[in-house]
Each structure stands twice: as structure tokens, then as C-alpha cells.
Amino acid sequence: MRFLLILFAVAVSGCSVTQSNLEPKQWRFATDPHGSQAILNGPLVNEEQVAIQFKRVPRVDKQNNSWVELIYDLPAKQLPSQFNIALTYKSDNALIVKLSQQEYGGSGDKSYAHYQTKLPASNTWQTINVALNDFARPNWTPAWSKDKGVILKHVSALYFVPDLTDVEGGEASLAIKSLQIE
Image 1 (cartoon, rainbow, N blue to C red):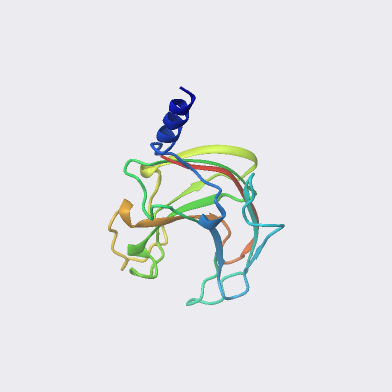
Image 2 (cartoon, rainbow, N blue to C red):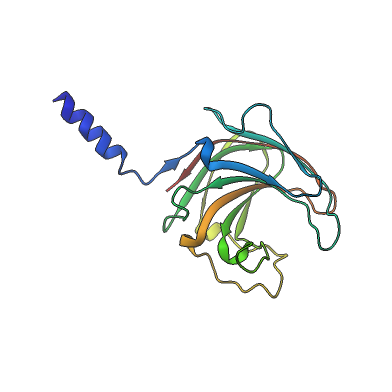
């Protein structure tokens, strides 16, 4: 009987469509080559959270923007249909969540005008749910960038970006305690 219960538990655990992931191999960060910095106080990911601080320099010139990003690489390299993201986070700035889709990135039109949504700043842990209809292309999207919609099988990562301005740059602190994608 005990063997059957263990077998059932293993079988059921493999059937879940929910991902709650603080696996270090799926998290990374990126900054521009113009002087912006990522600051870590220990590992990026530990058993309790993903935590990082950023210093973003102001935009260098018209052709060279500055940027900072915390990146979660989706294990399946695509989003499930009718997805819901439950995110528990703290951020001292508003937090932009982007759907990194190949059509708008470096292997696409290079506009980087990914679909995104903006979450409020929070100095305490806050859980927010977002769905596909919460995302839109940014208002700065170049007119030449053709909107192909969100193609879930082409979204390979989620980017978490503190809302720091191009003109001023700034500093930000961000932590994620839980990320679930259903």
C-alpha cells in the first residue's frame, strides 16, 4: 500500500501544469555595455528568493540606450496557452514584466518592443496575477515594427525590468519570492 501511495504521488507531481521556479539555471541578468551595473549580495538565486540591485546609467545617445533586466528563461521555451502568471515580488520601483518574443528581439525586427505590463512598486511582498490580456506593446514602439501579436510558442523568457527612465537612469532593488505560470 505504501508503495502505491508513493507511486501515485510521483505520478501526480509530474502532471502539474504549474511552475513555481527558483531554479538558479533558469535565472540570469543582463545590463547594457555602457556602464549600467547589476549588484548582487550573494548568489542571484537562493532557496528563498531571487534578489538583485541595479544601477542604470542615463541613455548614452540616440543610438545607444541603457538597460537592466532580470531574466527568467522558460523551461519549455514557450508559454502555455491561456497562461496566468502569479508573481510574489518586492521592488522599490514599478516593475515592468516583458514577454521576450523572437519577433521583436535580436533575431526579429530588433525593436525590442516586447509585449509588457507594469506592476506597482512594493516595499513588502506582494502577489499579483497577470494574464495575456494584461500585456500590450509599449507606447514607444517604432512605427516600422509590425505588430504580430503574442505568439506563445515564440516567448522564451520573462524579463523583469525596474521602471527607470532613459533620461535619468537610476537605482533599483528587486526580489522575487515566487513565480508560478499556469
